[in-house]
Image (cartoon, rainbow, N blue to C red; front, side, top):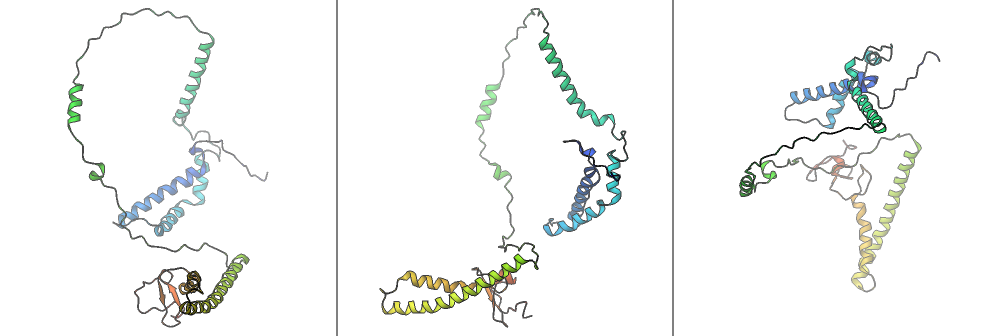
Length: 280
């Protein structure tokens, strides 16, 4: 209909009959390998990281993903225009082995159905003379030597000398104008406001607990004081960049006097003068 032909290839067919394998996947792999070799030769001592993969793969994709290559894939596989001569006899050698095995099994089945009587003539058994071997001497020599050297001493395992840095989990891609994202932001904002109100309230309770504990230790238990202090300490780790209460090293902005995690700000704890991005 409308000149469109839907062709379904047979299952587990050869890759030489699949247009994508012939015209796209194999060339992309070849160009990508060439790009990696060129990068390593031009940058000795460096390794291919995730930041280099995009450029290398885009170059290989641009060289391969063309209309002429896609059309050539259908032509080289003989699908369109139809060409039965694209495959030679050498391409069917692997399949001929399977056909020979099938024919041999068929002959064995026929032989089992119609057995033939065969006579075996006795043959003179050849007498073999015993030959002396020096295996005992070799075993004694092997046992006399002690192999105390381990494989790790000869060829030690490679060690990763890179500095393991603690990284924050990256935020997934989201649609900012979508309703679920807005609801999530509002819920986080409400939770943050409720936690601030709760901390302010517990701050007054903690001072009362400490005052009563000094006067009369039996009136207030230690667990109440610890709980009140823990609820107060959580706000001290609030970061205005990630808007979360996580216990990490923090720095304070000189202008707005807001605190931020060092991992979020991209600085070190020992920095003396820090200005956040909003105040720059």
